[in-house]
Amino acid sequence: MILLGSTGSIGVNALAIAKQFELNIDVLVAGRSIEKLNAQIEAFSPRVVVIGNKEDLAKVNHPKVLYGEAGILEAIESSNSTLVINALVGFLGLRPTLKAIECGKKVALANKESLVAAGAFIDVSKIQPIDSEHFGLWYLMGQERPVQKMIITASGGAFRDWPLEKLQQASLEDALKHPNWSMGQKITIDSATMVNKTFELLEARWLFGGGEYDAIIETRSLIHALIDFKDGSSTAHFAHADMKLPIAYAIMGKVQEQILKPVDLVKVGALEFREIKAERYPIWEIKNDLLQNPKRGLVVNAANEAAMELFIEGKCGFMDISKKIIGAYEHFDTEVGSLDEVFALDKEVRAYVK
Image 1 (cartoon, rainbow, N blue to C red):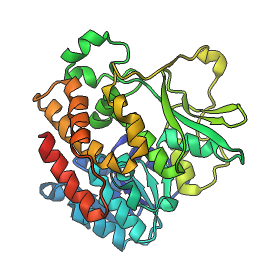
Image 2: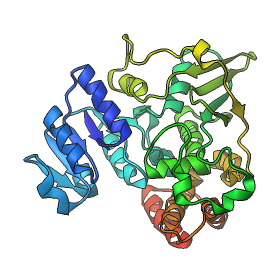
Image 3: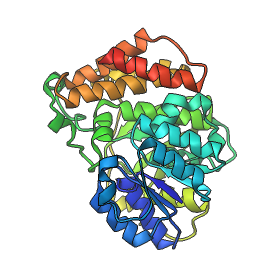
C-alpha cells in the first residue's frame, strides 16, 4: 500500500494492521516526525519515502526520499500499489486523493477535507471511508431495507461540559484537552467547535447520496453510527474507538478474525446522549443549509483552516473561529464548477478570513 500520513495515529494503526497480516508497504509519506519515520522505514522497508520539507532530506535513512506535495504526487503515480491510505490532515490531502483516483487506485480515506472541499469532483466509488463514523454507516448499510435517516455521533469536544458564559475566554490549551482521547491539534480543535462533525456529515452526504443526516453527542464514544429505517426500527454500530477495524476492512475487503475486543455492555453500564446545540457549537447554525448545498463545503473548509491559524497564533478567540466561518459562508454564496475553481476559491476565502 501507499500510506500518506504514516506517523499520525491513523498511519500507526495502518502499519499495525500491515504487520499483523504481513502486508507490503510501498510508499511512506510523513511530515516532520523524522525519528518516528526512520523507525517505520527500518520495520517496513518501503520503496519510496516522502517528507514535508526539503531541509529534512539528509535526516531520513532511505536511499530514495522525495519531499512536498510534488513528491507525494510523484510517489503515487510511480507506484504499482492499488491502494492509497490518505490520512493527511487538511486541504493538503485533496490533490493526492485526486491523483490516486486518476491513477486507478482505491483510496482508503481519512482525509475528510478531500470530500468536504471537492466532493462534487470525486468518484466516490473509488473511496473506502475509514473514519469510524462512516465505516459504521457502511457496516450497517449491508441490509436491504429502506433508510429514513443516518446518524453519526460526536464526543462533544473539550468544551461540552463548560458553562456557556466561559467559552469566550477559552484558550488554545483548553481547546486541546479532549475528554476522551489524545489526537492531533487540528482535529482536536475541530472537535471542540463541532466543525469536525459538520465535515463528517458532509462526507456522509457525498458517500451515501441524498437523504437525511444528523449527529448527536454520545459521551463515551462507543457508538459511532446509527441508522433509522423507514419501518421504525434503528440499528447502532458499537465498537471501541480504534481505527484498526475500519482500516483492516479498507485494506482487505473482508475481515474474518478478531481485530478488537467486543464492547462489554455490562461493564459500560450506561450511555449518555445529548443534542448538539448552536449556542455551544455555533457552526450548527449552517449545518442544514450546508447539507442542502454540499458544494459550499469548500468555503467552510478554507475559512476553518484560516480561522484556526489565527486562533493558534493568538489573533482571535475560540468562539471567533465559528463566527469567521459563518461570515465567510454568508459572504461567498457561490458554488464552484471545476477543480481549478476549487483551488482558486480556497485561496480567496483564506485571504478574506485573514
